[in-house]
Image 1: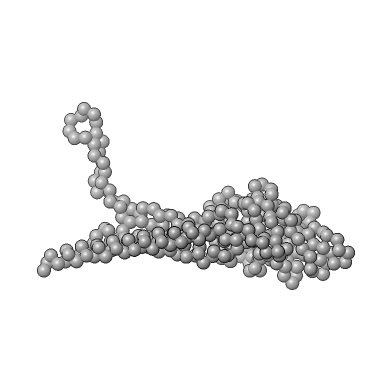
Image 2 (image 1 turned 135 degrees about the vertical axis):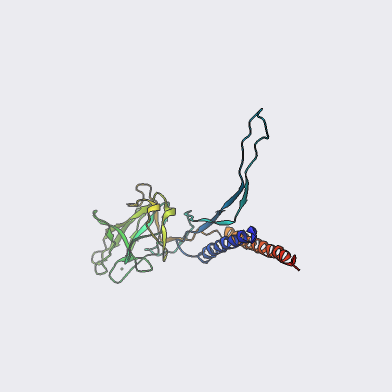
Length: 273
């Protein structure tokens, strides 16, 4: 069979993956805290049909020649997370909070610790600060202590505010005084691109991401917080629509290569007639 046919098949698969990635980006254009993914290609294999030789000045015989190589298709090299800052949208909800700069919110789930950029939080019936999926937001208690849940006792406090440094304050129901009930924590990774998507806007730690640095906002290179706003998706629709065109044309070109290779094989079969 012709090499070109197998090369074209690999090109079809690569561009199909590009379409899948681009389609997912477009689908999440309005998902709070979503980080887009980009696709990069690389050459699959190269067949060396003739080796190269070196020439020497003044030596007898012919000069040097370059190697002859034939490419054998393409493959997806990587699908990389893009962690550029998304636009901020004002919501007016006291428990909505956006990260300005580096960092992830830390949440506790049934599967362990997870990380997220979306700060669409709320208080449940027990006064716990939770994410939309019920994940418990993690932070430090007032006065310091170990990392744990942020709890605003509903029998003591209905009015909650979050400061730029993550400080959570609430107004006492009995005397109207404001009290600090905790402070949100943020996490930073040496290589955030190494995180693994865990669904529902969550990321799971992975060896490629490095060890997490967990501290309060504004410390150790962590960003600050902006209450009453949400970070929106960082998907660039203009770029994604361009990628759709590139993926479609690339797919069509590889499909054309297959049909042309088929015509050549048909001519070869017809030689017997």
